Length: 138
Image 1 (cartoon, one colour):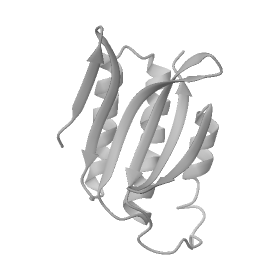
Image 2 (cartoon, helix red, strand yellow):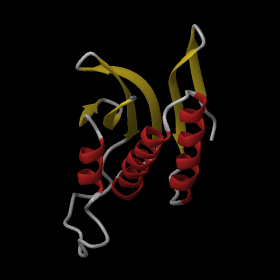
Image 3 (cartoon, rainbow, N blue to C red):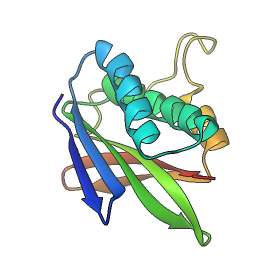
Image 4 (cartoon, one colour):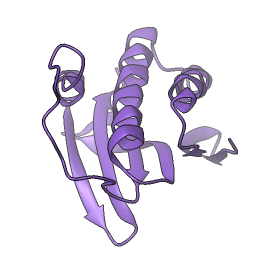
């Protein structure tokens, strides 16, 4: 997985990584997110939350959407505070949305993302769909 890291004045501002359409990709992305956020100096608790959010967003893209998927980590302002944005972009739904047969196994991802983030949402655009979540950095 090739990655692009943009820096401005020695402060990391953006990390973009294409994600292969494979269940193994989730584990690889978790490691990549940990490494990038450690390099950026984020506290361990924020890093753990961001890894979980990225994992949930990516799993949803791999299970419910068409490839390719892209992970982006960036910085935004939320209520005058610095926040880490975790987003996954895919090309849209592979199948119509359906209810999970086993709620003990599926369906908690959005609740987890909502609980861990300051805000989250979906942006539909020409290239597909971006699911995002903002986590306060400190």
